[in-house]
Length: 310
Image (tube, rainbow, N blue to C red; front, side, top):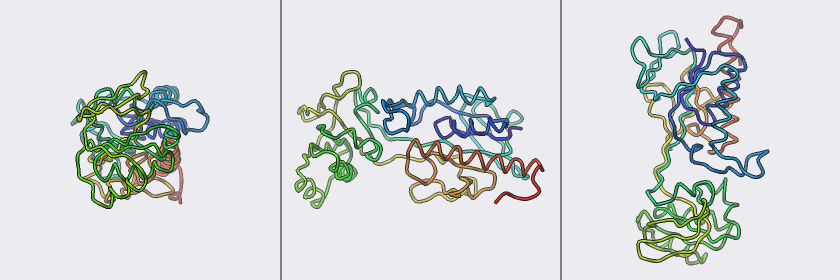
């Protein structure tokens, strides 16, 4: 019986593990490769990393730090979660089921988001270096740069409108092909934003730095930055369908703003699946905050505290 099982080994999950393992608690992190942080090559808005820091660095160092305090890491895919009558949880994975299923007094979901990255040659070489998905995080990177918004219909137009604050050298490439309406076209015209109804066949880049786009029309656009704007980013909440948790219209899990516990007792959600701005710093905060309250709950469950923590 683990004190806590954390499903997901991204930044939020690792921060939770570090804090709880220092309590000290018996903690397991179940993870499969992937996630936003795994493809982000250079976060530039994190305190203390003025030259930028990669998601891979956070994942690698986070695992090392959590492990030194005793956290266990299990490379497996969780396939099912069941709430036991007394309030604990049974966790089944691809390799562990039945009598081999894992047991935990508390559970943390840190499964993150799945992004709809288009199949464009050399795109992944540029992600986090010269191609971005979040104007709040990386709009600054387009300042003074000729920037393309590669997206689908209205989503691309909206992204261009947000980026216009940072750079006026913008062009929308409607890779997805959904039509934009007259009002959206008028907005692009008024702001002087170029528009191409074409697919991007290839990014031409050197060491992750974008140089130009090659379009299906045959045109080659010289750009140094690009932002992706496609619908379909999904919070990975499928495992929670059997629980009494509230999931909003955008697919994110509602948690108590103070504790990060969901509506289902002893079940927490942290990071990008929760309802908040999707930021690394917030993911870390979620993890630390949740872990503090999980420790309080575990002391209560262990009979160490005479009353429920408020």
